[in-house]
Length: 204
Image (cartoon, rainbow, N blue to C red; front, side, top):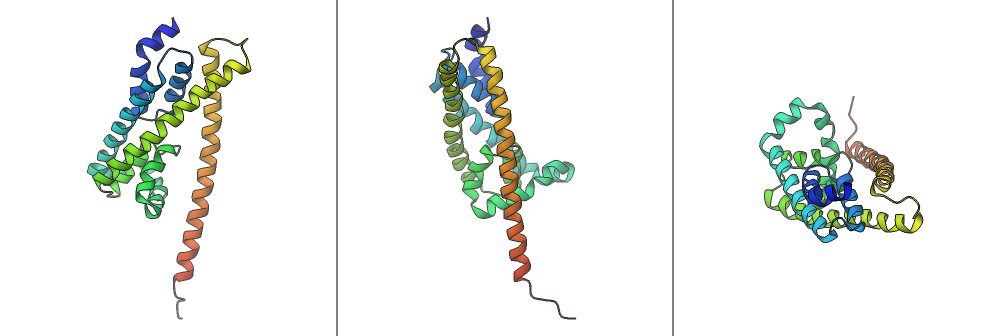
């Protein structure tokens, strides 16, 4: 019954999930492709198209209404510093990077749009990011399914494997989030120190 549901609705679920956040859905779809319920190349294709369209949608929300959203949403405003730091270092790379950073999959494109990144530049690097992200995440799900088959053939069934996969995803996301936060804190601290050193001393 579950395998039929995945076959009937799997690609639609991949499209809906990757339009927004998407990692968990895409990992599960990669796992399902290893089980033979979906085709991996179609999972990746759907994810690339839907993820690119989703980020493009959120970018234009930010470009058109970003200032108003920043005034009304303090949590969005709190993430602006991280995105601006990435944009200063490498605007194109920032568009690609936010796709891989926990907590910035939706907020990132909105803030990039609000920051005034040119539409053509965003569109190009948005597709590049999707082309890197979709096969990587789906491939991880497929690889997990392959390893799971060899690690334990006693625990057969999509549901059990999916539960373990979700636990691994949550743990991995938490670790990545900690690492990114630590990196951003160090980068912003270095930037504050360099700005303080460049300011001339005030005379009494």
